[in-house]
Structure formats: C-alpha cells, structure tokens
Amino acid sequence: MNKKEIFELMSKNPGFHLATVDKGVPKVRGMFLFRADENGIIFHTSAVKDVYKQIAANPNVEICFNDTVKGVQVRVSGKLETIEDAALKDEIVSHPSRAFLKDVIKSMPSKEAFFASFKVFRLKGGKAVVWTFETNMAPKEYIIL
Image (cartoon, rainbow, N blue to C red; front, side, top):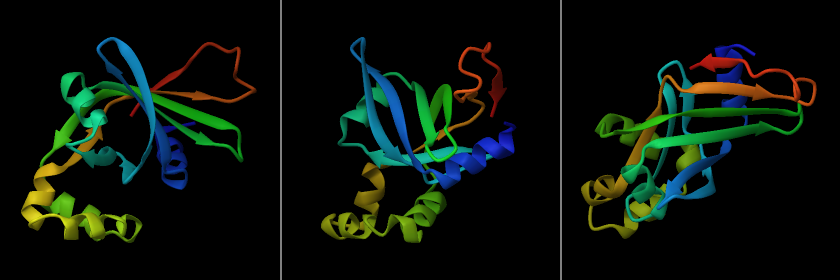
C-alpha cells in the first residue's frame, strides 16, 4: 500500500485503537478518527479523560486501523502534537459525524469552556506498517506518513 491508500483505508474505517503508556503500563482504547490525509491523522478527546493525561505525559503512541472486509491492518507509530486551532475545532464540532458533541457543548457554561477542554491531536510523519495474512511472515516495510 502507498500513503494515499493508507489514508483511504483509515477514512473508510474511522474506528481505531490507540496505545499509550501510563506509569510503564500499556493502555489501549478505541478512538474515532476525524481526518487522515497528508496533513496528518486528526482525532480528539477531552482533557478530563485519562487518555489525555497519558498523552500529555508521553505523546509517543501507536494507532491501529483495521479493514476487516479486506483483511488489512495498518499500525502507525509516532509522536502526537496537540492542536489549539479554533477554526479546526469549529470544523470538527460542526461536522455531521460529530453530532454527539452538541450535547456536550450544551452542558458546558460556554463554547469557550468546551474548547478549553476539547483536545485535538495530530500524528504527522508517523511510521506505518501494513499487515495482511499474505504478508504475515514477510519483513516489515515501513511507510512514512
């Protein structure tokens, strides 16, 4: 697979797993992609969650996307950066796939208060490896995203 095909797989399969470390113990949880393209892999969480605290303490992560229909797995390791861009946050909360955020925003004292706790991350330049049953035993080939 090339970079474009990897980004397409991610976009078509937006649920992914994120691995972090908490005091030396690995932690994995499901997350929901916002966007994946040449500008990076974008997702978000809340500052009140443990995952945010783990990323703040150690931004080195691995993410894993699966296309179960095609039997393809893509793992990407790299360092997350926090994005504090109000326009991007507006774009995310306005997107139809993020309708679930509207109730969260309403529960906050203001949109500004929501944005203060709404943390957006980007993984850019990560190292991807593609796995299939056919390539299971082959040496890994890494693709820089």
